[in-house]
Image 1 (tube, rainbow, N blue to C red):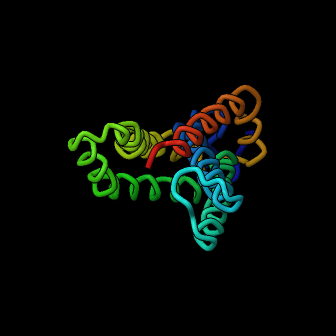
Image 2 (cartoon, rainbow, N blue to C red):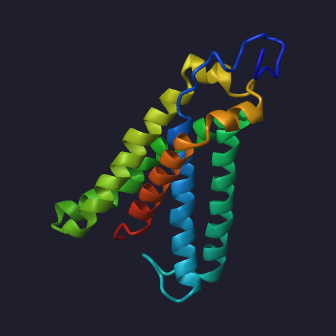
Length: 180
């Protein structure tokens, strides 16, 4: 059977995984946002707060790791799926303390923070929980880790890949240019 990498005889072609597109778009969008912020600071034209050299370099390293995580997810790597679930679970948990200053700023009439508040609410309390839920679906648990990476790349290419990259670019720019 095509796409088999384990002895459970399940065909990866027959299973419809969930959450890959959302996770990959999030990872690559986050990487784009980090890269834009870091490069802006390194070039003397910061986007958002100015980052010191070690923070800018660290942002670029984290961006590279996010690209690798997204690509691993795209290739059907089961470990990447578990890391993605853990990463989004952490985002949900730390979301509340992160958004509280934005809520307080909006309550004080600083409506310039409303965009960042809405964006943060979307990322922490809509996108991340949905991503966790999708990756925990039975189809996703069955598919990730058993699919042959070549079959996964074939499935996640063409129009699917173009749409995912487009969402990553939109999300990355939305996050990079959010007022701080």
